[in-house]
Amino acid sequence: MSAIRFDDVWKEYGDHIVLERITMEVEPRAFIALVGPSGCGKTTLLRMLLGEEQPTRGQILVDGKPLPGEPDADRGVVFQRYSVFPHLTVLQNVMLGRELRDARFTGRLFGAARRAAADDAMSLLAEVGLAGQESKYPSALSGGMQQRLALAQAIMRGPKILLLDEPFGALDPGIRADIHVLMKRLWNETHLTVVMVTHDLSEAFGLATRVIALERSRNRPEERERYGATVSRDLEIFPRRSAEPRAIVQSAPAGTTRSGKEHQPGRPGALVLKEQP
Amino acid sequence: MRLVNIRPGRQTRFYLLALPFLLVAIAYFAGSSARLAQNPNDKLLPALPSMVQAVKQMAFEVDPRTGSYLMASDTVASLGRLGSALAISTVAALVLGIVIGLLPGANALLGPFVSVTSMVPPLALLPILFIVMGLGENSKIALIVIGTLPCMVRDLAMKVQELPREQIVKAQTLGASTWQIALRVAMPQTLPRLIDVLRLQLGPAWLFLIAAEAIASDSGLGYRIFLVRRYLAMDVIIPYVAWITLLAFLIDVGLRVLQRKAFPWFASVRAE
Image (cartoon, rainbow over all chains, first blue to last red; front, side, top):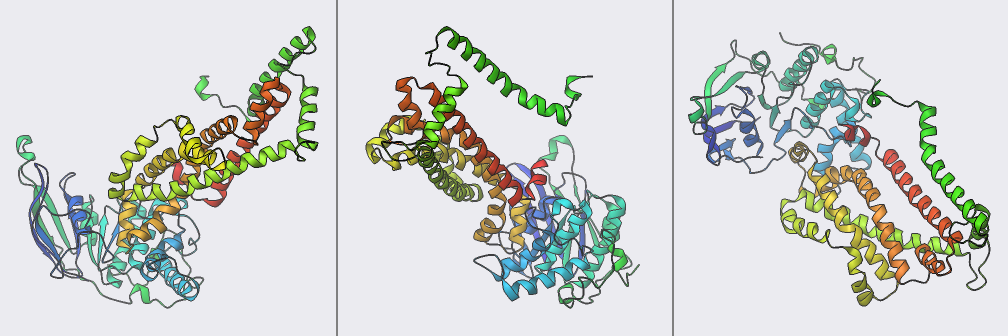
């Protein structure tokens, strides 16, 4: 749950201006969808939020403080690909964030701490519809399941901001609809501010509280290098959506998940009790 | 049907596999019997019975002078050198490869240096090693390490750099420090690739081992081959070469099996 403020942010690569005059406020708990044509700097903007790239001018403030210059645990991320670690099982992938937090030197938990982390991870896996898959390697999962896993992995660490870089772009429409349901639920149940880059307008309008379109103001070939994209539309979704905090995912009681719920892999919609329209 | 589309079946595959081996054996024994028919004392292409006799003597009879089974003690000596040298190379390559591959600063510092040292012909350094370290075990092990390490470091650093950037970023968003990234992300994914790199370096390692043993040694497979060369003892040399080949092959197979068993996730990653 964090407010983000872009303060006249520019991004240039040498002479090439990618983004210019980005000024906006993102309120806590917002779900922002960034849309725009290819090459308009959506992903660059996201990478700046992530800390992977620095603005050339201006600054990005999170809760009033300048963004640290490298990625950290406050900002979780799900990429379109390569978001999960292929050498870890599903359970190990989800537990990793906890292990990295609690075991600074070994990066591994043992004994009771490990069991507690595993229990939390198992309940989170059940939440995202991956119960029963915990000992598989990611390569054995479908694309949709891998993205569910990536979401669970990011959320396990408890970030304040979740950044999504076309996370569902490579999925089939049916799978995508399912994962949208999950995404909405996660956003409601956690305290996340979400920023999502997407190509899919219906996805943007279907999920977000606010859709921000980036566009170049001038697009003639001789001008293209010298004029970057900027915010051309800033649309609040009406009727206004707001997060309805329910039980936080992490606090789901341990031990209720392993065999408790009937579920269909890849169709966690079956798990949802009350999904708002 | 086009040749590119013809896939041999299981049985055909086996015959095809055996064919080149068989052809070499036939060529050898044909040549051998032709030469022996002309001159029964010919030593160049000994017949199978004389090789069996030589192996029996080398492998299963105690050498009266040293009181040991020569082939066994040669094998132990050679494998000991090879093993300790490759152990040093592997561990050093793992550490250096991850450091260079993961840290841009270390890459700037050591990358070019490693590239240059991997171009030094190791055998040209052998005299220096003998002068500096003497003729004992150390210089032989050092030769193998020098011969294999730079290439292994270079290859491994490249493999680490090929890890998707997303993974490194993702680990950071899970709160990982540089040390934790190395320990939990880079190293486990580097280990199976290390086996690939090691397999590639087995050939050079054997080369340097035999070379070092040939020049200055008093035991070892290479030493024995070059010793009996003076007597044109092809009946010993050929079985020794076959034995060395078999050992190298078994080590390679062992590493492949280890890779498959220890890193079950790796096959699908490599297939991508």
